Image (cartoon, rainbow, N blue to C red; front, side):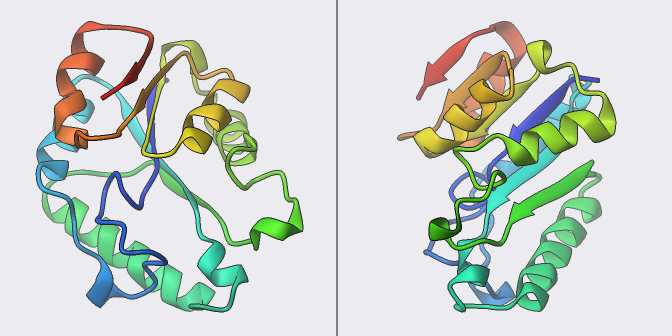
Length: 165
């Protein structure tokens, strides 16, 4: 199974810093079209997201779950299904193996679903996203610096490798 691993904040939704409520969750323009296109290309979609706002006490696990259900519901209304959402709730000082740049979330997904990492992608907006993917053996990456998820469609469709856009 080929997968596109996606960071959440800054890739799927606007990153306002510690997005822990539905009222602060805003999809980035073009996300629905991009995700639909990835599914049409035969990829499954997996979100891997650091959520240290939980560990810092900025919002609760229940708040995060409410935002996640909202995100999934809005995607499903548009025929977009996520295979799973993996998250790290820990404070950065905890030193866990799941917080990106550690590869724990991706490795768990690979183990659970038998993912073909060589032919999968990671799309993130921070170097730690790419570092986690590389440590887990993900063969292709896109680091979003100035562009959006929508701008990655041509890369995913026609290329392999590592990109910054």
